[in-house]
Length: 188
Image 1: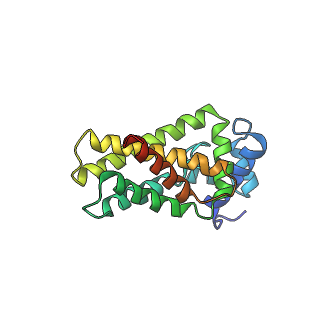
Image 2: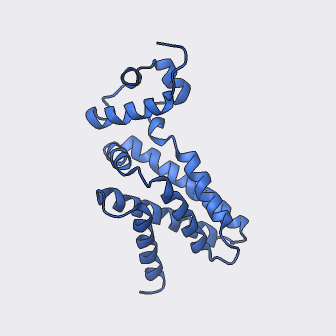
Image 3: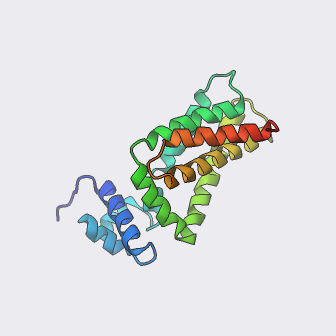
């Protein structure tokens, strides 16, 4: 094995998801992931802090995309509409990732430790969105309420999309969830 391997990070992520899907998260070791990827454990730990983090690798980029879209929404946009712009931006990341997203979600749903990690990541995303809304001039508690509502729309839309197995897009599922939320809050 050479000192430098191309696409090591992606190969490790692919191998991990395959093994977690085949054998289960608990039954899979970092050594097995590295071996499946044709790499060493040492290489694995150069890229990922632990065996959970391989499933949450894109969270930082997703957060940046979401926050930047909220910040870049027109100044006249209502807070929920700024969050909707963020939801639309995030949906673009998942356009060709339906099967990967379904497999990843199945692994997470099957393990309490991973569900907890997912909730922590979503809470962090909500805090970042609330901060972006406050920078837009939205006061509390409206900023935090809107951010939490946006995360709920993202979560429900995502769950509906992965359950639909190929029907519709994530953007459509999130827009439908947002419209239902707006109808509920308008008394409809």
